[in-house]
Image (tube, rainbow, N blue to C red; front, side, top):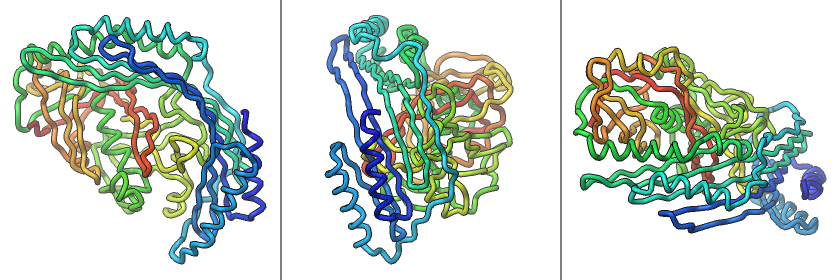
Length: 467
């Protein structure tokens, strides 16, 4: 890495000042993005940035500073000033402690079969035009294709040293379809770690044509959705957003401890709920940063803690929360490696990576076969959830009636309104057709957006109230 010596220098200052703990995170990022709007190239951009984030613990208080000017004199000034400010504050209520963790040393990277930097922008723009040609009947077509290559160098006063290199591809679309005096919209994202071979595997022209046809069919043929208590089968896309919003976020330990209340919200979950039943025995929810080629992939978090699969819910029972070193200490635990930052100039906070419902044993057709009258919700167009992640709402997009165990005619925008415990308690069967979809998960102040997978298979939910 080009600026490694400057990161080492910053750490040497922290050691000289005898801070209780010090951490330096160097990030070097390069990327490229293209946008096509209604067939017209609108935006193209190139990124090449680097900077250092410096965090330390002194007087039971955490301090943080960042700089993107690689001059030793300026680095020294900013670090010493930050330490002086924290010492001067003398916060008598400060009681920050960090969990004890293993010292880790690792150098890893995600391999690229087709190097992202070898693909000419004209080829990428042609791909966007090919997609646009497939869906040109849509009223509004926003298509974005981009990549970023992120290199990190994380070192601590404890001796941890992690070097990583992760390339990520991103495809985002916003589609508006009109028919029969009605309109529908869908915004969605795709992201994988890896080279341009990932983009080829997405088969985007065919994928987008399928999405357009589903939206158009629903507008032309859909009947009003039934209302009242009904059985429901939701597809992997719906399962994923439900898992992310109603399990992932409320299981973030900083939310549970009230440290996100004025920023991203609170949680209906509290520290004493470990071991409590919140869903049926069919419900097991995991978060796993180590999933190969995933959007949220990493092997060590931004505190240098080794990542692992976290089982948030096991067979319907609350099993563990997402932790960084600070929240882990507060709950007398070790960190499970959930500290992530958007960029060098943001402090790492508790975040999800790839959160999903663990697959069951049924095919989707078997889930549907056992319903006499219900609704199949393949995907959604809208969702919202309250600040405590307890009461939520989902509006379906590509949806169908189920009659006597078979898919019937399309239905228009069925609405689910339900609480988190009621949702997961009414799941009586889980499919094996797992899919991973992508979200840019937002949290913090200033806001940080990080790539994450939200996934799972289809699942069957009994006795759901549709509005």
